Image 1: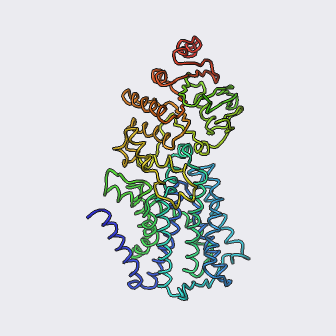
Image 2: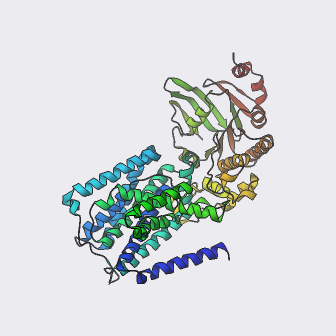
Image 3: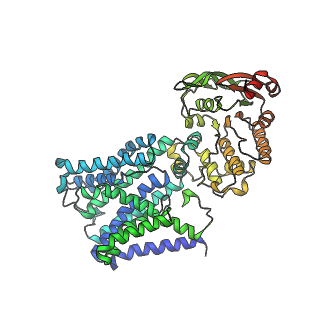
Length: 318
Length: 247
């Protein structure tokens, strides 16, 4: 069997599992799977910014938060979901573009600090601007949308709603990465000076990488708010940014499938480790440390190393 | 012959240090101009000022009679000015062919049309043509990072020619290249100059290479032009000998 057939078979298997899963899980399990789908979207965004374009960002939690708050605030005031979804994603795209400007001046850990400050700032705004965000009391009774007259109120239906979004976002990301943009992103990551001398407008691509990543963060947030139906500032603190960074790095930064695998590790693995009771976070931490020591390129880097020792893969293809 | 590039009174100061102290010259269409000079004579700084990587402290740069002083490198590149760097600059995680496609893709269409257009931006044939020209066709699908140094050096040069530039500035193309590869590189450059009508400016330390390649040579010392002319006369110029041997 050729590699292509294998890949298609594997994809079909995963799709079948994801489609059938709600029938085999209790409501809590369905909720966790929905969370996985939503977080995967945010991680795909961060993978574009960090994995492909090489711009570190600790701001992804802020964009998930902005998307969630915009959706929560507007839908509880009677706005239709789709309008709030578009407003949230567009707002994040625009703010992400602006946040990209510091990346044109500073890189690496300095950029990490700039984006970290942004996350903290946004978190403080969520917590302190009570008149707008409800402060620590948050926003309650966030409705789930109806699609073509069908309410997504039941957990299973909302899971499919999230899954459909994940599928659409995945298709768009796949297209983007394989387009000349994906190649330009990799060029900005690998050698911005040469890229610039070859006509690549590195400024514009850097800003675009930030904006697209942020926009996907916003979409993730817009799905997150109706999923949990109650939001307060705490999930959007720095911890989530670090968690999303963990998803990208553990999954395999710059690999197309990295964010999905990373989100499994960050969202599902802690749940599966619950049987260890008090020790589960410790076990989780040890696993992550071990992985990073053995294979800094993440789980997909490990897979690639095992499958093809001498890789011929195209960076923007993987 | 008309001039492609014209540099007038170019200066570059770094604090109190004067790296380029008022350099003026022109490059005629179709010629290969060599710039030589001892280390620290301002050759690379001059390149960087011409190409927008550094902002000159004074003076202007004209391309086909239009002022391009301080223009961003990417915009200048899209006007047909290309360059290589002193140190090897490729994209190791892209394949050899992808390196070349990248070098041409930004010259076609708009950013939006590139997103929705074909994945190779319609450049596979052109990339393969360049690969053939530089004798790299067997390596097309290898990751560029896996090539030998000499092969990477050829790829590095091929990328500079991918978009069919009119003017190419080469910063020490022969640096670190072995003798066999050197001859091949010189032949390729001469062939491109003849066949594609591309104009070159070459910075080089390797005298043999530069004398065999260039039509005309400028000699830079301490940020100034101290001599210029055809290779044979420059070689005999006492000022040049003094600058190289010290005095």
